[in-house]
Length: 390
Image (cartoon, rainbow, N blue to C red; front, side, top):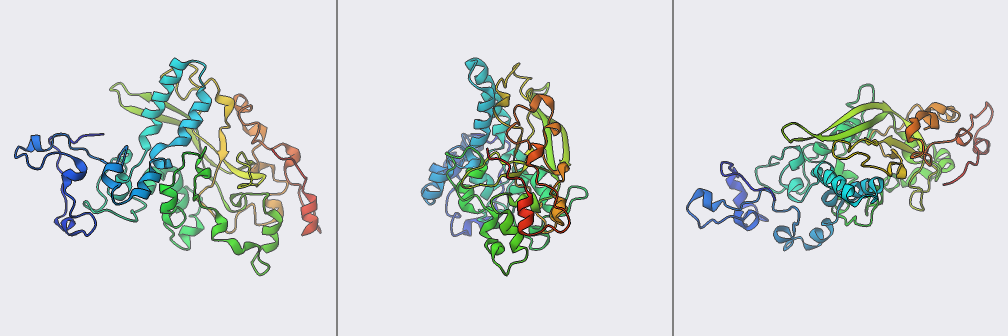
């Protein structure tokens, strides 16, 4: 736990003392220290900035036992998927080297964890901290101070339309939905210890939860939705260009500060074979995003640090936050059918990464065939190849 330096001071609005839920709790009951000690430095000895990390139980558990018990294994607290993905690529060929890689992961990737306090009282430490509202506890934290403070470079820019030439997400443009509209507290606090990725986390949102009527006869485009059900993820038709990142490298500065360099990023849109295909996500095609990793991401710390790099694809299942009702690919059938530029082909992948991505790149024969004039409805369905499943 990070301790406060002697010169640091905490300013708390006197009105906080009147707060019905937390105002009667003494500072030392959460943060430590000795209020009976008259000497300033001695009184603050052992004071902890964030007493809710790594274990919120002692300070939050008495009043919020169920939430605390689950949230100990939540994605924000543990970052389990990072661990699993890096472990899969680093392997255990050399235990000594694996230890080095794991320490690097904890120092860099693990730094962006969050906690009870870093959502409901302050901004996350990873982005500089700072109280949200003096010291009041925010039940629904301000999303641009908490959520997109960490998830800003991709999600915020997509959602608010801050990528050049790309409009805001329709849920923001039309409804001003905040993150919590889809990403509930139940999801944020859920025990995700069994999840290999964030899409397997309990209570993860799905479009159909709000759009269950899209298959009804009276719904606009009902026939198209029924025709493509279980074949395409919603984003295949309703997302537009989003950011892909490449070649992220981790290192230390000359003064020992941790940093990373993302050598390349670009806006693009690629449909690939669904790498998470299951009963829960049966779609054959899904939108994929290139993640910022390469074989040399950890070279500063160890040579050949990821000897099993090909164990996972670098193009991963994605749900871009730039949803539109009308997109270039759904404006007409042939916006997608026969349009090779939309699909992740082997030729789109760097030669050294083709083995890693062999299960997500789309063979030419699986691309839905172009629909000729006069063919529609059931005929259009028959015009598509049967393809294969993974």
